[in-house]
Image (cartoon, rainbow, N blue to C red):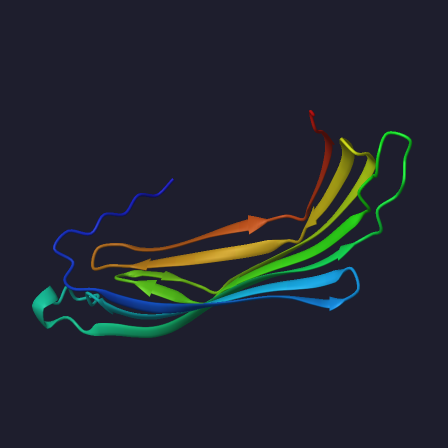
Length: 165
């Protein structure tokens, strides 16, 4: 675990906008998209320890996005009531590069594919495949230079869900 605290870090400004779109593409297929734009201005202390009042300002336009493409199968009749159809989802996220003070984060993306099958109105099995991914951060400060990263291996998750009621 890493904890960072900024003391007397100067002025920072962040402005942003978010755009959301959800629309049916075909019968039983829908798409949901969300995009975020951030305009960031942060003071940056140089490696030689320049005082904050004369430190340069880091300016960046950063984008993030996430979305879901979903297919829903047809509801099936049953003696105990209608059974929801299968659901298949493709989800993704992307975060652009980011810089806050001396901390820099590289861009990263992740994706997953999920399938849910309902055996009855209150019993279903869900399987999710998470794609491999990697994140990286660089800390460049006058006394410390460190690079850290996290590597995620592909994962398969299986869940049996029983709903009460």
